Image (cartoon, rainbow, N blue to C red; front, side):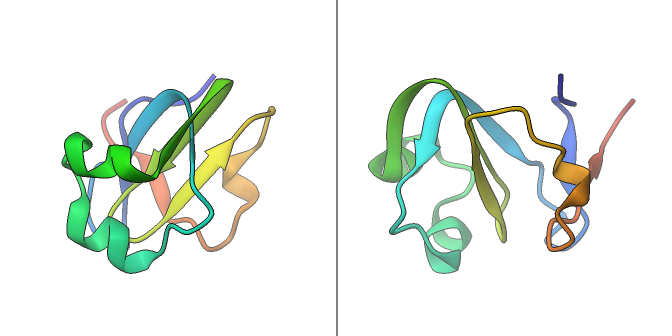
Amino acid sequence: RTCDQLRCTACDFRVSLFNDYIWDQSCDYLFFRNNMPELSKLRAKMIKKKGARAYACQCSWRSIDELTDLQTEQQLRWVCGRH
């Protein structure tokens, strides 16, 4: 289970999550910087994968397809935004 109100303390953007998708490996910092949070633009690099979840803010992104503790990833600065 994950918080659906994550916020990035590095870029101060809300973390978007997309069920049943992963990010294409060609994604880079500038792609997210220029296209967040517009879903229509983000879809260009989203790949359908049942059971996976794609996360992104304006400076970081992750594709998760198995149980993962995001708190152990030091480079992510995502925190609960409301609870």
